[in-house]
Image 1 (tube, rainbow, N blue to C red):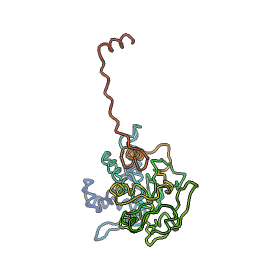
Image 2: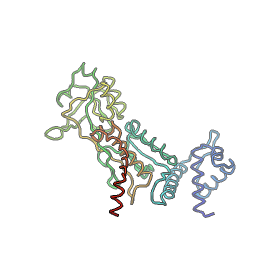
Image 3: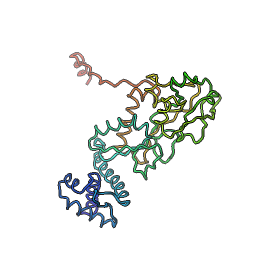
Image 4: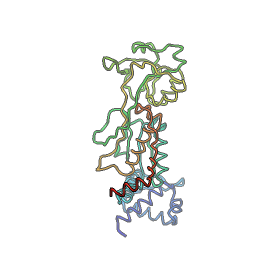
Length: 335
């Protein structure tokens, strides 16, 4: 067998074994025996000159070298599958593994259903969602597409703007009844303000005013580096917080929070989908971008919150115009 073909086969067997968790489970999936799988993985380790799996009484665990090899093997196998599926030039068959990185709260609330739907429509595609509020390097993390809010971190990446995220000040009705609502930015100094320590390195909030950007130093007894925790604190009547409108969308409609200081709000954050440069996006990335843009356009909360407009109604197929005998005769005379 060709050495390259044999290496690809061993990579598939290795990743299948990692996913299955044991030689016997991988053997059942591959329709072979446990000793055969164990021997083939041992051959792969000999070929690479490194131990990839640690065999213990509790099962298999990846070594440090095994983790690195597994991640790279998945990328290579995904690219091979995409290449085979795209030979006809259409990209109809989306296969392989799609690894998407997103901020945690947005990924949980809106991106998960988009990706679940994408996976259901493409049975040969494995979707891997990585939620993190910290930036992950696309190459080092094996990320195909990353969702980013705010300024672009790396101009070497290809960026697709999918919308913008308005920011606002939110407060619970109970807090407002006890302490009042701020009417001006100067009023904030008399209120408990919940600071997002991940975004704001200091207690200075920045607002857009008629005369430009206005910094305001705030204070408060609670800080957090997670949007969900800050929202929970607002709902617990702990104070006023700046946050994305999409996070409080349902709370606003239900009356659980109020949006205050509407005339002074922070600058909206652009939302981009980023991927590595190339002649054209891979079929799996292209299909994800289409699903993301479609969701932003057609889902009411996404269209209203991120695009600032009502969602477009679904397009209906046009009925064909019936051809009467008169029209057929006229057409035949002109041909």
